Image (tube, rainbow, N blue to C red; front, side):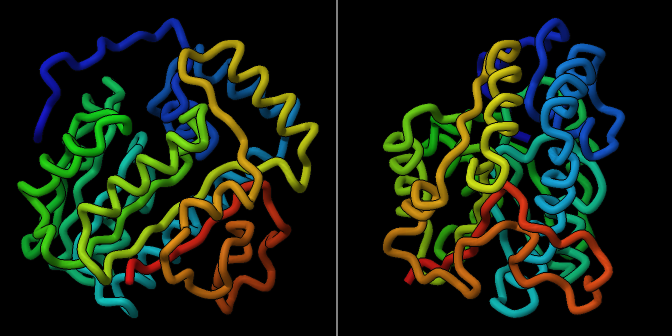
Length: 268
């Protein structure tokens, strides 16, 4: 485990996105302030729990594809959040036991639960880096202690780039991270949008931004698509997470379009 020299202290008086997301997914690693804001958010935008569920399902399908079909055996998951069910390392190592995963976050409660993340098959490895998204060079350097950065890596940026207010800065972070990874690496990304139920989602996001120290910014799909510039975007492209290669047996599930768009793309 690698910790920053000045890790932030745990503050239970303000909500944190990782803990609120954990609450929406039915997790237990959250505080009253997280549940209160989560409930206020859901009252304005009830579909947030549907978005959260489809976001997690998209991650599972995409990681499984990258391991089984693309041959990826190492992942860099930035903004991992709280451990729930079917985390990246569980999904990846279920598909190939020798897969290596490095998680990156800088929330103190995630750090407390790092031991839950730091489980692995004997053949693989799981590690944790305490770092901020705005420190891509530090992230890459720390990840290199576990991952072979001369071999393809699956870079995961799920629901984190929306926390960067300026879209150009978010794109710059993606570019710097990808530049450090070799050809054959993949970007797996998704973030909230405002094209399906925009007004309700925007109102709920306003509640979040008025109460949380780290604001979130919904992106248009064409803005998210800019993260993919120069990459080979896999079919079906950038789509609502519920529509990205749904499982063949998912016909009976709620597969409505959701206001979170995701994509998987290969670095040529």
